[in-house]
Image 1 (tube, helix red, strand yellow):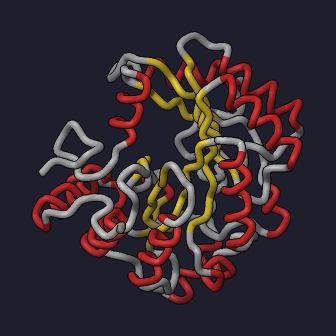
Image 2: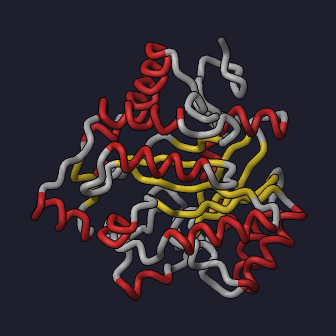
Length: 305
């Protein structure tokens, strides 16, 4: 039995498959740092966030966006050839006036072979004016908005100082989908004191929403973060690699097959990583997921009626 959205051995809906069948060629995401801030910093920010604002591998914010784009493109082209999506990754990429957003986004859209934008942001940081502009942009290019959620559980959300509630997130998903804008959601497994059941509940809930993609991350602890202080003080349990793999696979079984899986693990900067050390071997995690799904003969969407 083959998975519906795969032309390889994958048993889940990969981003490569999605892009290949949408654009009929290789699509390369170019990570950028638009030098945005975050509205939540005044409240202390999320406890896991590094100084780069989740943009450890985005471009250098001291360089203009076109320079960043060309540098990353040069590296990527050593592996692949194709078209490009500009990925505004670091911090909150809608936290500015619409004039500033237009200037930054459209600078990238004017570049040769750029077919779209992916914009990472918070559900509490898209104004009505911004939403109107994103709707116009969506009619001109292939647009994806990536919303950080991390968990549906309010007690965890407060512990990590997420700064918005679940209702805020749900409302923004609905607003974006009313404008036919693709939505990708970020979640984190292994958040302090969450059980496996809680992590599965997050995936099950997201499956009830009109989302087009998901990014699943493992919680990792970085130096000089509030999370590091909490971990050193309380030594809360971190997931092992095997635990993480089994949780991800069950989450995939609870997601509709058409939901695109944009990411299955994270990429910490090794020099800043405190724990867990296994996350740096990303290929081991991805291979482990493939092996687990093959051995158990399971697929994305198995538990979806």
